[in-house]
Image 1 (tube, rainbow, N blue to C red):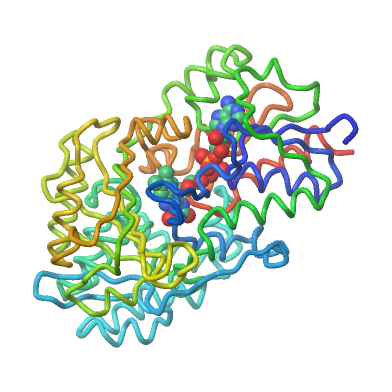
Image 2 (tube, protein in one colour):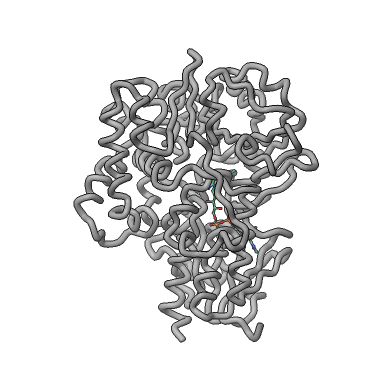
Length: 472
Ligand SMILES: Cc1cc2nc3c(=O)[nH]c(=O)nc-3n(C[C@H](O)[C@H](O)[C@H](O)COP(=O)(O)OP(=O)(O)OC[C@H]3O[C@@H](n4cnc5c(N)ncnc54)[C@H](O)[C@@H]3O)c2cc1C
């Protein structure tokens, strides 16, 4: 490569997306990645035993399938294959039953008893109108092309998950199902806009599917990297950037970083006012994650759980709300809400014959050092008695380990920053991807549209750079 036009710091999904958009526009781009391997939050490794592949961070990828950028890329040509489990989600209860989300709205609604019509009206409507709201969900705040649909969506999404679930559904199972989905927002469920997470992720289950890449999240990153290289882009691993001053002289630097690590490498370049605004950026609760190598599938009491890629373990809406409120308020929950995936049921390539893996986390207070392993396994045992007997090995990541692995996730906050109303739209400030330093951009999940493996933060940051400093 001749002298590059642009540098991307970090090879997470947004960094790779930004680099691809720049390379597609004919710019020479080089990506520097601190780790020995690429992918950031979309990567896999043998965390427990040889032959067991685990997703270090992201596991389920509806946003990657729905991404307006990724869906235009020839990733299948670079080996990416999506696997769709028979059920997107199962949510078991103490009586041995489970609420489920299927790929189709109709089948999901049909199993929700008295809430069938309400589910179709709430979720089904926005599945049908997804094309009307997609650009608002998958991008920064902008004047909507379909203001009527968007305002109907916004009126519901900007509520708290608890108030929407209790206002719309009558069955306790449906309320719990919706609350669990909203729990991905990493906020107490009585806080606005947690309904947005419940709604968007529910809609995603039907629009895109809660799917997993064959071989693990690393396959997605590898396919993105292969496509980038095919466009002439270069990736240099094992190269942590300690200061933007050490980068080659280029017209644009795009940082796949959240404010805390960004300040470390570029803080000295920013005016005092902007630096203070980044310092005020808030990170939220952390995650406590466990990966297991298992000698067989998880022995679920509710048969439907064995057909689902994702299983939410938390019982009723009230119980899940309490767990999330506790973690937010600084108390590790006694009975944490656990988000679990079981990829090898649908992708045997990730474990030796007949063996399995499981991946789970719960939310804990920001930076908490409390050991949650027993509490997480107790929740699994509650719905799958005998689970512990199947465990061959475990790997645990506490919030401090998560931040050590990736500085973007301060305090173990896997969303790269709180998603409450104050920070939902102004991520990390109202200038979004731009900084006061000409040619220096932020392209990480700390910019709109935020958390998730979709690459759209990288897409919009790259477009901005192309429109400003990389015009020719
Ligand atoms: C435990 C966990 C579970 C998750 N589950 C899901 C899920 O199921 N589905 C989903 O869609 N999302 C999930 N997410 C969120 C998702 O992983 C992130 O939102 C996404 O990866 C953000 O992408 P990014 O490109 O902005 O940043 P990151 O993925 O954080 O990538 C940033 C990259 O920059 C590198 N870097 C940092 N500092 C430097 C430096 N100074 N020099 C060079 N390189 C540097 C890092 O090593 C990293 O590779 C999960 C996250 C975690 C942690």
